Length: 102
Image 1: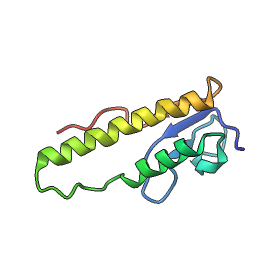
Image 2: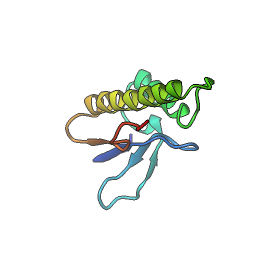
Image 3: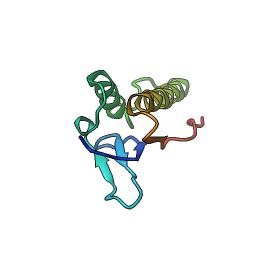
C-alpha cells in the first residue's frame, strides 16, 4: 500500500481521481488499488471520475446545470467517505472546492 499524507480528490480524463500531494513527495496520481480503501469506494470514485466532462443528452440548460451539481455533490460525498476510510493521519482535499455556477 502507498503511504500518503495529503490526497486531492480531483477528476481527470485519463488518470485516477486521486492525487498525491504529500509535502516533499513526488506528486502524481494514485491508482485506486494503491490505497487501503474498500472496493466499493474505489468503484464509486472510478464511476464518478468517468462522469467527468460528460454532458447530459438533454438539450435543456437546466438539465446540464442539475447534472453538474449532482456530479459536484457526489464528489464531495466521496471525498468525505475517503477521509473516513483513510483516517485522521491523511488529509483529504476535495479539489472541486466550489459548486458549479449556472
